[in-house]
Image 1 (cartoon, rainbow, N blue to C red):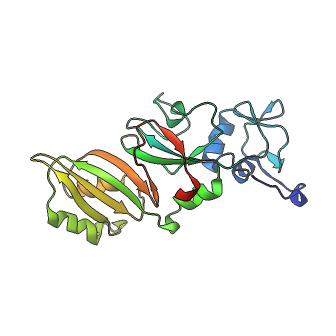
Image 2: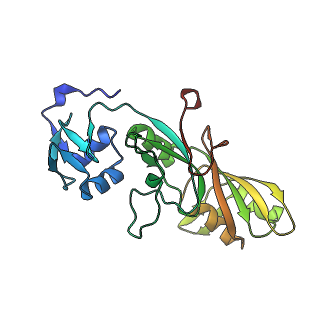
Image 3: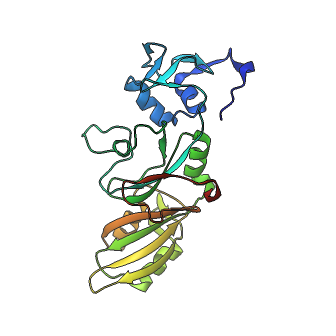
Length: 241
């Protein structure tokens, strides 16, 4: 349960910062909510992220739902392929919010998975925890299963284990890589990264002249996707974190 320091009640901060501090949403998501007219104070819709408020915000509504003291919640989802992780999409594509039960409290994704990648996605309303889990400084490992368009040679996997330099500006750290199964035409690789650069796995294999046909994130730190099916969501249990 969030407890506010009422000694600082007179100090005004921006609505954007307040929503983040209250655990309503990350700053990125909060900005989208404000711009979309989904934040009200009383009956007044606030569309300016720099609007000054005091914490606790009285009569705060998010999507017309009252926000008082917020209980922190933590979920994991199996994000399906073809679904994006943003709140809304200009092209009308399906987002993870289309899959969430409307009775759930407001939650936001921790980091992102690109549209063509499926697997483990964390969601929460705890901005501190979300920022910690997504921070590169924490070096939280992420494990993926990767289907390639052809069998991969051991010497190519060894290159990934040593780290790749695609350019002076784009250097990938050493990865843990193992072949888990193969047939005459394709193979599956398990790869664990301690970083999460944009489309990193796809770029790494493209550099080695392989095409990624399927990419599934199965683990973040100690959290495991397990038997969760595409589109399903469940609470993260206390012993899992």
